[in-house]
Length: 249
Image 1: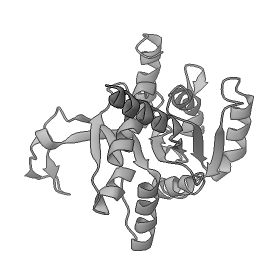
Image 2: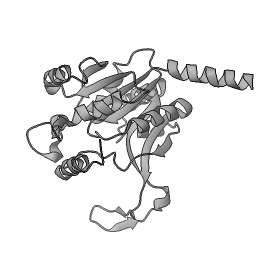
Image 3: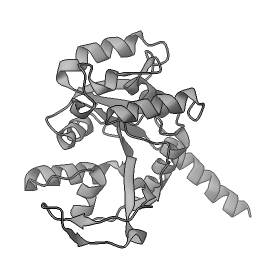
């Protein structure tokens, strides 16, 4: 019994010593949502989308530091906004300029990691409703499995369709998941994946796909239906409705 307690105690101490950094990507132009205000700065019930995302990450137990990747043209505006915010002004955040694509922006964020970082959590800045509990579960899974993505099983029938809109096939939806962020990785694994992709000219739609294409396993854990990504005007309307109706704090 004493031996078991000692092992549990050592594991708990080890977890406390793990250094976890979040890379939040908010460098896109947000063209699909329209308007002149970049998506990260759009007001969502009075608070900018990206500030709401940062609120969630700083409320997670596991996160020690945040690297926010922003468009170079918006860096000065973003820094002023963060420093003026009473909730975030003194928190451990760092700004990094993004690249032309999301993949390049993530790689730029990874370049700012401290050398002693153990786990990296990568998240879309336009997902402001992610819960602290999901972030922490993602980190815990990455510690155990190396690479983890969150998602939800697909509920609808999915069709593979040709360019001229003829059905090619109907995959079994039991094996299909709708993937979200956050995604979490041991630092050396995700840095290796991005370096490999740069050398080989490989592009992917998310970071887990780079790890997968490199031949490494990726674990999937349950995401959240409320973890929506703001992409279109209707998404912003829905997000505001969720706050007004009390579905999101």
